[in-house]
Image 1: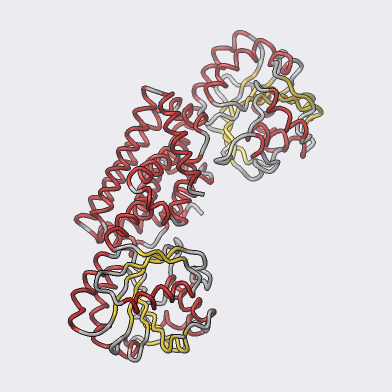
Image 2: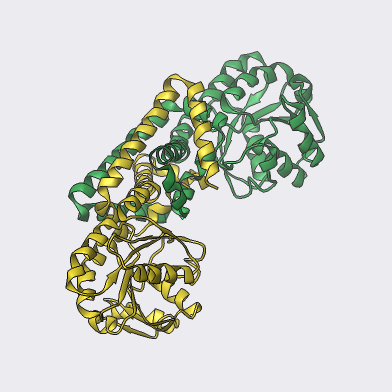
Length: 281
Length: 281
């Protein structure tokens, strides 16, 4: 049992972690830290938090485990402030969708204190954001990638993996760079594609949106994702994402070329791709 | 009430139309025509068809309404054979996802007989195919675009729109070219994008598919669609689709460029796109 679990940023992910930790009886005290006092009211009222504060140093004082659940670039900035305020031995993790940046930042801070940072990326979410979208079962059955570095303490890695497993998640370990390449492919690329698709159709054939059926809705659902979160991700991971975009444009060009000159080869390509998609189920 | 409804091609769409017409008591006799006798067994056993035949002329003899529910290019070929066999006054419609080609073919046949063709495109479906995926409620609440031409008889248009409305669909009228541009944007473009996305990720980062969450699954769901159906659609509508692909590539390039040099403008673009997606709900 964690004595004092501190969650910095009580939105969709932080709020869901608070609700899930409460439901699992995982912490004696759950403390929320946010910038905006008004937004801290609902999670306290919902019983997800025992206390809430806008004062980061006061919040993390005495913490055993700190979960940073704010957008990626903000996480990197907030890390130094946690390092200055939390007691020696505190384990810190996060929920960021890119990991190389924050792991580098934590490595740079290591000489300055005896906190332990181990990065996490819960592959769960929603196109909705904020505590109003939080759910106690958000991590149930979800994959969480934990990214220990070469200098990570085994005890801290175990604390972080144990935390997510207690919330019902399946944990995978990957190094930060391999993680960033993988999520560029299966998460960031689909997001930028969905945004571009929604944008193109709205500009080219806005009237046609009346005819949009389930295929269009599913394919563009994540184009309603939070612009703040995704701006940071696209900027932070643009090298790996650029690599994926090159592969995607090539796949698209190939399909278009086959439609123009070789229907049998197009059919074979679509059958191969369908097989790959069906293997995913 | 229709005396003799003939459905050519008893797969997902034809089979669902048979089940829905049966449930609505819309026809005294429902006849299925297919190429493969073994595939006609299940819809007869399910009570969707009163009779089934592999003999197209025998099937359409005496028909009041013929629904052609085979892939697009096959529909165009089959139309001449229906024209030769069905009685004068028979109304013929289809379910094809592109309409300009079949409407042109029907116009060419018009001097050869007194049948009436009015094109239809039910915007309903599934990534699954075949009668085993058919459902009596597939058209309930779905949009069906009916595409009368300048020479269409009002009575035939009314028969076709009335048919779909009786199956629970909402009917829109559009001319065939406007329809083809609209579906290139909201249906064919998302399909080719989903296929390319699935293909690119399977090639670039196959191991990363283990980490694929709901966003990737939703965005690529329609990449499991029927290769026969979609090869014909991509080929038949490649001019309108090419136009959409140009717009899509431009939108993608813009987002990538903004991520590299102007995060604030990227954020504004994502917020604008999110607004367009939310307006769709």
